[in-house]
Image (cartoon, rainbow, N blue to C red):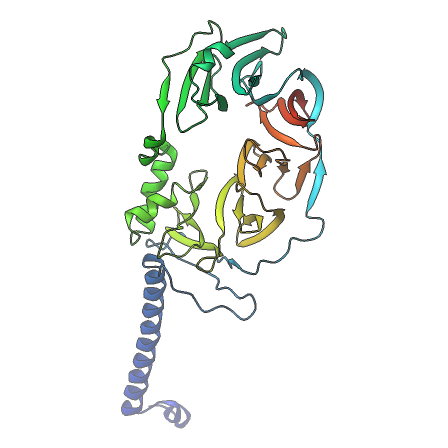
Length: 416
């Protein structure tokens, strides 16, 4: 028989049932709230509003976004995107540095452009401007950096037949160590593409392209094509033309784990998004108002950080995203032709890139930068840089710079 104290503490059956019913009701309400919360989060990821604006937080003016993948194993970072007006870069955020070591060769007896080092750094290809009266012509040459002997792949007489009003090189590249690809403009709307064997100097049958070819965009690279397929699975609600347009608008592939892109399609927002494949999430890095005039102009990943450039109406900003932080590293003056971030070389701990701030025919400085993951520094070896190139091993750098009214080339050892 229970004692009197035990009897006082033993609830009668009716009270016990009431407590059980109340506990069951409370547990049910908690489960309901959790289920609804998870459903809303998934709906927000899987069906993002193309034009909707989230409620900003009082502290930052933007809404942090945390998204869980459908399998609940990967969680996207909670990133607070930057919004206009953008904060100014921190004072002293851009330092200065030098990359020019010992001089290997100087090419300065004319007007030259587009120095391109062979993959092993043993040769440099470049173009020469040839002015014949009022007619502008071109040549394509290769300098052997060991023997200092120059070979002419395309002379002025051969180049002239590709002209309508003039002919000039607008791109050079090495598909491999034995071949140079040259793209020539006819001074109107057509182009000619030639591939030269640097040993025999023989050229392939020229491939021509013209104004009509712009109606059919070139195919995406295999890496971007794969990223497009993976992005479709994350933002499946976006129409195909919107997604295709974003992938032709300077997307930044972050290794095999993410892509940064901007839609820039009528009726859709202009936000800069990071699409993370592991967490199956699309997270805004920069929220932009409709008609803001900001355009994504390329970028470069380095470890856990991604640099990207946005061109505005009167200036351009260089952004850095690391983990859940997005900040502005540098503010650049506006460029008439629109800037472009061009990666030049990258190692696990260093990225070198150029900001193309001027049209190819314009005189002006196209600054070169070095970023080590924490510090951004502007290369100051040449005051008015036209272009630069670095070989794949990272041993040699070719500078093309303005000297008076002509462009000269200096091939230097790359400083550590």
